[in-house]
Each structure stands twice: as C-alpha cells, then as structure tokens.
Length: 372
Image (cartoon, rainbow, N blue to C red; front, side, top):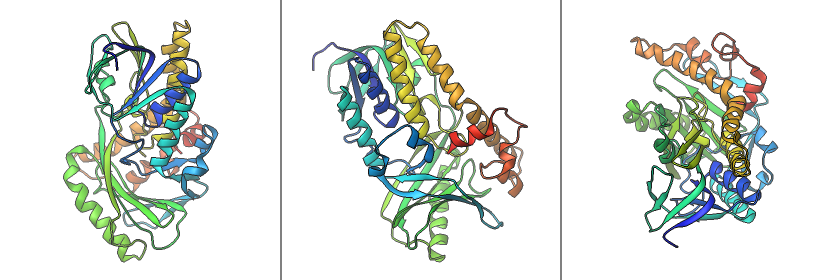
C-alpha cells in the first residue's frame, strides 16, 4: 500500500452499519475503502442475535442467515407470572454469516473491504494512519466502529453511558418460539434474556459498568435456574460479551479539518437504551450514511445535516422515551431504594405504562416497530 492512499469514502468498522455504508457509497459510484480490525466479519459474535421483523423491509436474503423465527416475547418480573406479548416477530440470526453477507454485498458493489486492518491514529485533519503502515485520506470519513468509537472520540462525540454484557450459548432442550426477558431489581441497569436458536439458546444479561463484578454470578444463577427447570442443558458451548451504548443519540455529523465525518450505528449511540437493540438501527443508519456521503460529494451542502435530521426522525422519539424510562429506574437506586415490580413493568416495552405519553411524545405505534 502506498504511503498516501486516497479515496472518496473511508469506512472504519465493517459490522452491519459499516458494511451497509460501504455498500451504499460504492453503489453510488464512489471509491470506498472499508477497514475492520477483526480477521473475519462478525467474528467473534458479540450479540444476542435477535433482529426485528421490520428488518425484512430493508434487506433481502435473510432466510439464508436465519437460525430460527421468533413469534412472541415473554417477560418475567420477579415474583410475578410470565407476561406474554403475542405477535412480537423477528429472527434469530447466525450473526457471523449475517455480517459476512453484508460485507460481501459491499465488495460486490465495488467497496474495497479490508479485514485485520488496525487504525493506530486518527489525525486532526481526518487522515487515518494504519498499524500495518501507510495512511489513508478520504473526502468523507464514516465512523462505524462501535460504542467506543475512535472516530466519535476524535469529534468529541462519546458514548458516556454503557451497559456491560455477558452471554453464554447452551443446549436448548425443548423447542421455544419466544424471546424470554427477565426483569429483576438485582440486575442493575439492565435485564437478562434467553433467546432460542434452534437447539441452542443464547442466555445472558447486561448491567451497569459498576456492577460488572456481578455479571458472572448472576449469569450462573440464571443458567442454573433454567437448567433446573429442564429448559437448557448445563454444558456451555460458547462465551461472549461486549458493551452497548445506552445514553441516547449523539450528533452524528461533523468535520475533522477538511474531512466530512459521519457516525453511524453504535458509534452514533443508536442502540435502544432499554432493550439494547441496535442491529436494525445499524443497518438503516449505515445505508443512510453511505447515501449522505454520496450526496455530499455530489455537491449537496446540506447532506450531513439532513442525515442527522433523518436519524432523529427515525429513532429520536423512541430513543428519548427509552432513555427517560431507563433513568427513572436508575433514580430508584440513586435514592437508596430498589425498583419494585411496578417500576420494572413501567420500564419495559411489554407494558402499556412504558408507552404512555407522560415522558415523551410521538406516534407510539411507529416507535414500537422501531424497537422491534
């Protein structure tokens, strides 16, 4: 690689957001380079692997990377009977295959996608220096590099509120068509889950970073409970974990020197602060980021701000509502109390209390589809 490589668009991070951004920009005829430090797309998996049914509207070929269809959600609050939410449809993905599919589509559109490529420095003018040697200068830089985005940090846009997660994959002993959610005051700042993938279940939970030391014992307790109920086996097939941004949207557009910059996916804080759901937002925002880059380079001076406005129109109301619900629960702990069942119900999407208009306005039907 030359010492001063240049391109129209440089995408850092090739998860769903980055691959879709690279695809959209390349499809518009731009020269696009995509970088990812991982050796292979989607590996290691750091995801519960559920996506909402509405993603079918955005992507073709999902059947090829689907492990199982989901029909319902069942929510369990401490001391209460399970609460079913019918017609809560979606898919459990093979996340590695899903990410690979999106990266291959970007390459087919003309993007130069490079894995095992490490960014070691991001200059004040937007120049990217690679650990393997060389620099890349782009007219538009797209940060799709996750909740602790280096691109976002360079802009001063930082996800300051994070949930830490831990997940195991275990044998699923009987068929199940629902995502199971476990709400408990012991799980501070998050919740636990069982998501079925055919004959395997992803079992995990997320908590505030200050509670990270409790991840292992809480997960062990949940695994033991599910095993005693005869739902899952005691063997552990895989471990994973990661960080989810839960502090709300960041301003996704800016400049570094003469380089226009866009943030997308988790780098833009688009994960839902209550559910942690982020794949759908990553796909949508990544596509929009690639299109905005093409519009900007085509002479549209308002393209970056239009991108920010479009993200707010798509996700702003539901994210602000979720953030308000999340903070209401956290205030219980800050006041020296713990949230009871009523507070936990009000803080989760399965109950009408969550969707009431006391904390945020907007079309709740549209919001529910966005969360799903």
